[in-house]
Picture 1: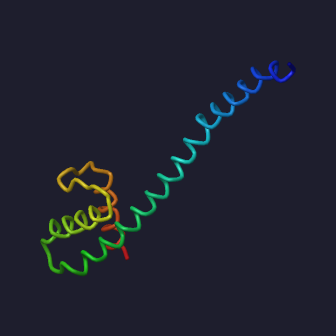
Picture 2 (picture 1 turned 135 degrees about the vertical axis):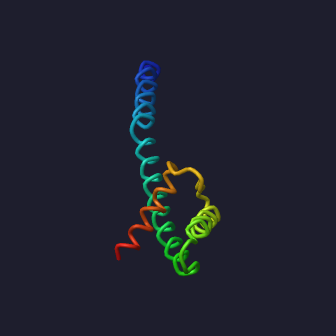
Length: 103
C-alpha cells in the first residue's frame, strides 16, 4: 500500500527529469553539434579556397574559383548560393580569400 502512495512522486520526478533534459541538455547537444559542423565547414572552405587559387591561375577567374569551391562544398554536404552575396557560406569563402591575400 505504501508503494501506491509513492507513485505520484515517482511520476512527478520522471516528468521533472524529462523537462530538465528538454530545456537544457538537448539544446546544449544541438549547439555542440552545430559548432562542430561550423568548424568543419570553416576547414573545408579554407582547403577549397586554397585549392581553387592553385588550380585557376591568372586574373579574371574569380567566378570559376567560386564555382569550384561551391561544387566541392556541395560534395561535402554544404550548400552555397554563388549568386547571393549575403549567403553566410559565401561570406566565409570571401573571408578565406582575403585571408590568403594577406598571407
